[in-house]
Image (cartoon, rainbow, N blue to C red; front, side, top):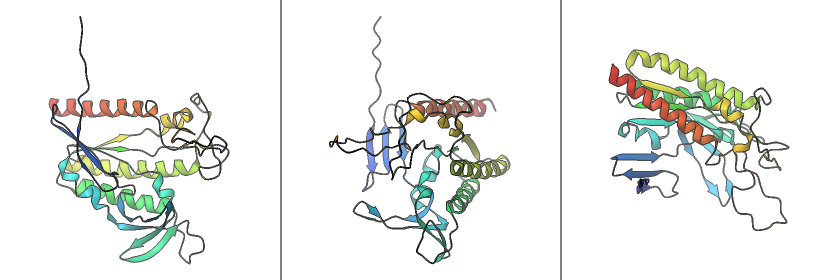
Length: 265
């Protein structure tokens, strides 16, 4: 017996100027898949000068229109915050600067990235729970990095080839704080959702990702033609195949179980 199995080739139907937000269409399944770049969930002014970045202007009282304007179009939504909150940022509310994260030399109150992230989560979940549109929203938790012997900017590496054993690595305290904010905000929103029909699920991949220091590109994230220079390691993003396959398995199980529950009710 010969089985001819093939994957449908999607058609890209949209990309923005920077190709950071993309949309594909799978005609056989009548499925539209979109990736929307909104790294803070909040309205943010991000400007570059060559390879350098100006201080990010982050509005803590306004969500990013890139995702809120598209929210009603989709039946399933996977959303997350992330490591962008580590970047230097100036915080605004009511068109007024109220503080910052890591802005030495500026006479601005240091509020910290956890302050901004909590604001972002509260505002995003409030938008979701008060919306008349009720898709299945899966919130993916914070993912840890695995830099050792430094950070990304000063020679940090990730050259382990095997997962950690349980209890061998507890993670970065900052990562733990940020995930804690997520869990608290999600549980509050989920409780509200039980009353108003909001469909919220948690994709908590923090712990299983914590055990995978071998899952990052390391020095292989980009081509380095000069072998005499030490390449910069990427110990934050993730390889495919690898840990993300497990995330996908959990996500698909979450979606399928939700479908089973709705069909049986």
